[in-house]
Length: 229
Image (cartoon, rainbow, N blue to C red; front, side):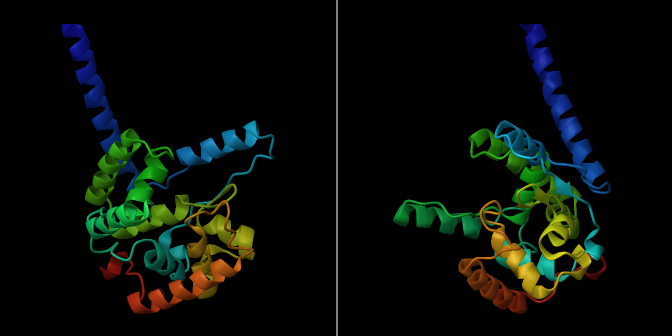
C-alpha cells in the first residue's frame, strides 16, 4: 500500500511538473499541432475521407489586426479584463439554461486556447477540470497577446483547417496578414461551428453575424499588441 501511494504521489508530481514546463515552453515556442488535429485525422480515416490537415504557424504581428479584433468581439469581449473565466457570462448561461433548457457557450478565449492546445474535445467534468487547471496556468505564464496568438494559430476554422494562415489561404487565397475586415468578421462568424459554417462560402446567417461582429469591432477598437499594453 505504501508503494502504491508513493507511485501515485510521483505520478502527480510528474503531471504538475510536465504541465507547467510545457506551458512555459509554449510561451515562447510555436505550437506545432494540437490533439484535435490528430483526432480529426483519425475521424477522416475512419470515415474513408481524404486526409487533410492545413496548418501553418504565423506570429501575431503577421496576422491582420482585424482578425484578433473580430474574434475578441464575437467570442469574448471581456478577454482583456478577466483572468481566464468570465463569471458574468457563466451566470447568464446558467440563467438561460434554467429558462430555456439549453446552454449557450460561456467559454473564454483563454479556456478555448487551453482546451485546443493541451486537451481533447468533450463535455466531461474531467475535461472541464483539466481545462480549468490549464486556463489558470496560461493566464499566469502567458500574456493576453500570447494567448490570442496561440488561439488564432490553433483554432479549428474548417474541415482540416487550423489557424489564421490556413483559413486565409484556403478560403480567401491570401495570407493571414492580408485579410480585410469583412473576411475576418466572416471567419469569426464561423467559429461556433466551423465544420458546418464555411467562411469561404457564407450563408445568409453568417452575413448577418458578420454585420453584428463588425459593429462590435467598432465599439471595441483595435486589439492591443504586446508593446501597447
